[in-house]
Length: 206
Image (cartoon, rainbow, N blue to C red; front, side, top):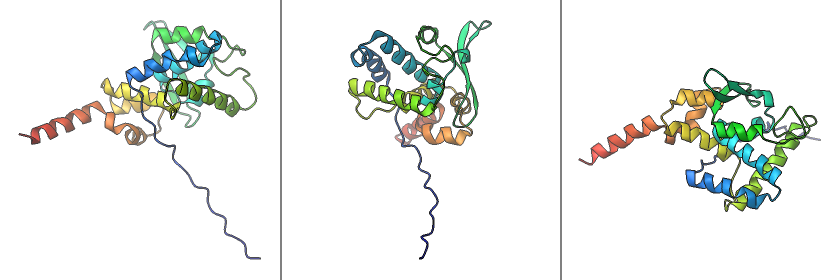
């Protein structure tokens, strides 16, 4: 019999997602009590959403975040998330707002070493899949049926860029291996570049 040649697996890029506007993000948070009637679960979901939005962590990194990776910087009087991205192994260290740190520290979890991974053993993917399901439930409850957890990471990146943080620094915060990755995903929101483009276009009207 003739053998069918074996094809190389197709490497598919993750589908692009869009950041949430401030109003959309507020509405997402406000929808949590409606989506999750159990107050302990609701608080846990809110803490995860806030963590992803303000740290820029991907869902796998957020779900498997250890408690010791939320560190208090006594000198600067802030909390920061310090971890390594599982996808790339790249180290990240991101300050987070005090209220987000308080929500994280208040999370009730079955495993003492983690915020969101209740067993701490077995397959990480099972825990990630469960939390993906919960976040998609939340997006639907908020009226965003096509919402995706990655939009929280996108929102962090875009808000940093809009605040004028340079692309190179945002790339480090996101744990990208190359600034090319950051530029490919978030080029339209690079504030300095967009301001220059706007000025050039407006000047052409005269």
